[in-house]
Length: 262
Ligand code: NAD
Image 1 (cartoon, rainbow, N blue to C red):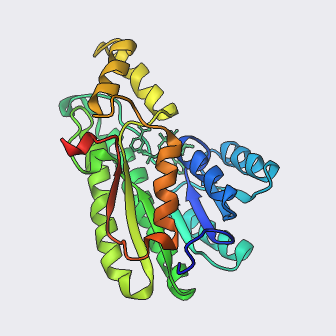
Image 2: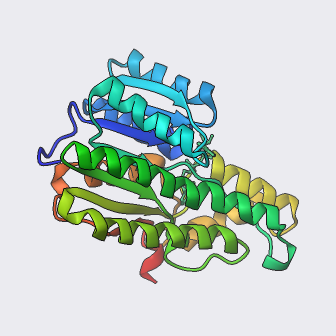
């Protein structure tokens, strides 16, 4: 993406029905990007697309389960059909893991976290790099986490999955650097979304700490003394997708209020 701005760029976003994906879609559309929004929750993806169109932006929605090769391929194909190319991708669909020590976690949960958070990102990059290489390059941003940079007690599978996203990102960045495709991650700290709320409720139910105590703990984990907002992650994604970051690839961009600085 030589042009520093995102106006007219064709960008695919997964997990666009809620949270970080939805807010990022809204911010990219406001800059004039043309979006293909994928989510396993088709109604949620369509609701994001409708809100963007109502605000004068360009967005289409398509149901995708990122663990399914044929569906990820179809999402990329739909983007090419709709917009004639693929300039950017935000591979953001992911699930959290409930707070449990490793001995208490079912094998099935481990497999599910890996399928969505790791295989999902791998399948997205597999199909997107092929499409971008055929159209002169592009920029891919994968959502990892601070749990991709440091450990996350009681979330070993989740942390493993996000470390895997970092490893895949570095590898694919090196593979495609000479074909004009840049690949980076954003690594959010705790961000105020439905995912964060579910995690707080579950940990309270499991008796780890009251909801109030957890909110205080979450804020205190970040040197800035607060959790982050989805829009703050979106801003980092916007920069990585744009030509303004033209010499940045294989990088992990922490958006974490200083959490990993300590
Ligand atoms: P969210 O739960 O609010 O939204 C995630 C979206 O992904 C949902 O719309 C969901 O339907 C979709 N999704 C789930 N499984 C899918 C699948 N198989 N195929 C397609 N779509 C699927 O979560 P969020 O907080 O916005 O998180 C987005 C990303 O950010 C995730 O990868 C998450 O791990 C990461 N993250 C979140 C936080 C946080 O504190 N919220 C922190 C670090 C990283």
